[in-house]
Amino acid sequence: MGRGARGILTTRVTRFARLAPWVRIGAAVVFVVFGVGKFTANASELNSFRGYGLPSPDTFVYGIGVLEVAAGMMLGVGALTRVAAALLAGDMIGAIAVAGIGQGEVVPSLTLAPILLAAMVFLLFVGPG
Image 1 (cartoon, rainbow, N blue to C red):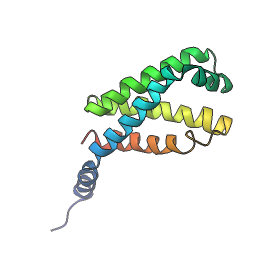
Image 2 (image 1 turned 135 degrees about the vertical axis):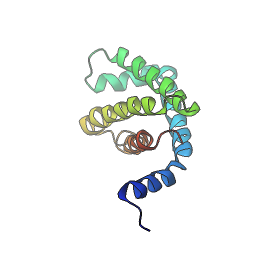
Image 3 (image 1 turned 180 degrees about the vertical axis):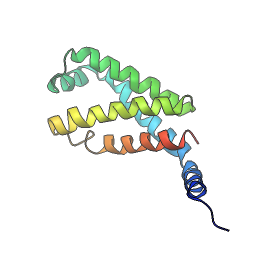
Image 4 (image 1 turned 120 degrees about the horizontal axis):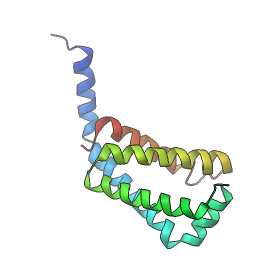
């Protein structure tokens, strides 16, 4: 007996969902490390953000740092995973657009950021696993 399209899709999502904890925890580590860097290497980060032409770069550095640490920790523990993934996907779109495409910053904005964006989209679809 054949399965309908819904059954096939559910089976595929279920298979991919097994990867979700690994994706979630791996991305969480990266986001927390980069978020903490916004505070521990503040002068360097602030200099980078000034180069992006953003208004009030000091506010952006702290705001992005808080977002990456808080949402990264949420990913790490699996709390509100889809909300955290959506917020961090927006963060990565901003990094790609402003730093990567806008400034030609290849590493990490045009290498790691697209990978993290894909990971966040994956988590939006499959959840925390």
